[in-house]
Image 1 (cartoon, rainbow, N blue to C red):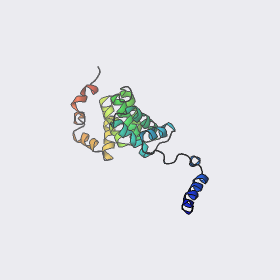
Image 2 (cartoon, helix red, strand yellow):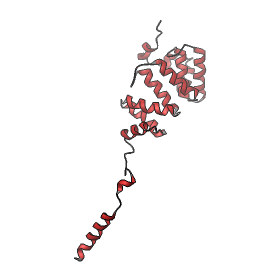
Image 3 (cartoon, rainbow, N blue to C red):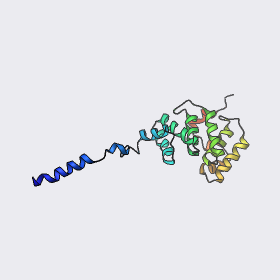
Image 4 (cartoon, rainbow, N blue to C red):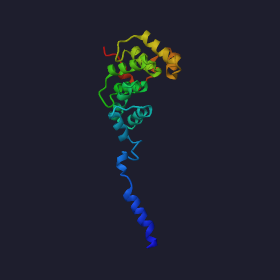
Length: 178
């Protein structure tokens, strides 16, 4: 009987334990894409959550990346704005839409993001998604270069020759339509 005492005491302890469900979800998923999408659906954003959109789009999940980037852009994350521009400019997770891409680039540029400044400057220089204005485009590129963005400095060094930054395979996309 003496040997049963520890088992009886442990059974009594378990029987008297509080219901763990009263504390909510114990040990919830924190690093899964499902959890990230749940957070976005609840309107929650953070720097790490916004960065997860990059992993999603690089893995080909452009639809969920777009949801993350849209929410993060709404909350002021300029990197998400530039990624929205990239998605729209390439028809990833939605239609190819150079006008929307240029709007995202301008929004990031106006918020002081060097990548947004560079992208919008190039949009203006090409007249891609926005009316062509080479002088204003150079001003945006110059601001990005001054902020230290290497690709902007490279474009400046090439005399603003857009072939310096555009792969030959993309020339069709930026050709004038008239």
